[in-house]
Image (cartoon, rainbow, N blue to C red):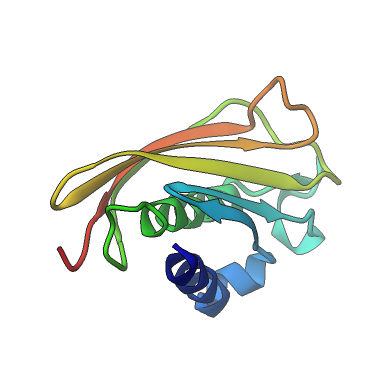
Length: 139
């Protein structure tokens, strides 16, 4: 498992958009991952409100889901997104860090299935939820 954790961490650190967004892998293990993104004025989508652009949230959720797949005990290696549906529930509160938690809840020979939730400081009201399917490479 340690090798998978290291591989997933290196994968995220090597992705240019992850660096640009300031993504930080805060937890990974056995099909679960957590990534956080600090508030950054460069990522504002609406200058009037200061709300982070949905594309930044989407990229963070996709990356977190991929990390969850890579850390799953049945996943042999890399992954790629097949399909990812994101439902935006509300705007993230300006000035607050956004954190995504993803779980790879089912894996077949070729496809992994993942659910994720993005939150700011208000843990009772998600910013967004996602569900997706990802490739399982190397099996």
